[in-house]
Image 1 (tube, rainbow, N blue to C red):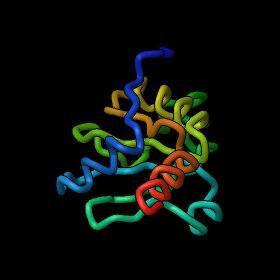
Image 2 (tube, rainbow, N blue to C red):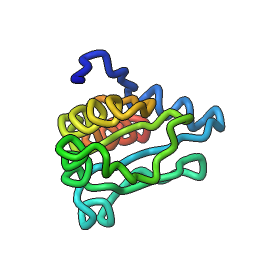
Image 3 (cartoon, helix red, strand yellow):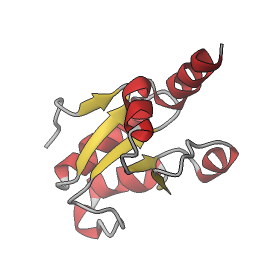
Image 4 (cartoon, rainbow, N blue to C red):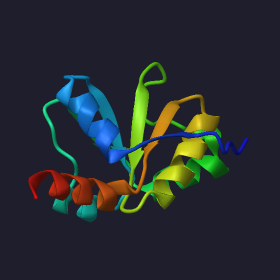
Length: 118
């Protein structure tokens, strides 16, 4: 089922959660080489990289959903701009995962972090 009610979190809200020492499970759905180049790092973040192609494949064969993602913990899904993350979040939501999308993706996160330092 395709849900359009996936929650979003802004970079500012995510940053505030981290400052409040809240543990965050972050799923980055970009290709591994992009993930290795840059991803959000913080002592409070458990960062997982599962490329979107693997998640899109779940839509075709949900019975093969052997992703090592918890169903009892909220997962913040991110990509470069937020579009792929939204698609992946919809698929994961359909598999009973609790998902929330980082609005604007890593592009918005970098811009927000830069604005803090200006």
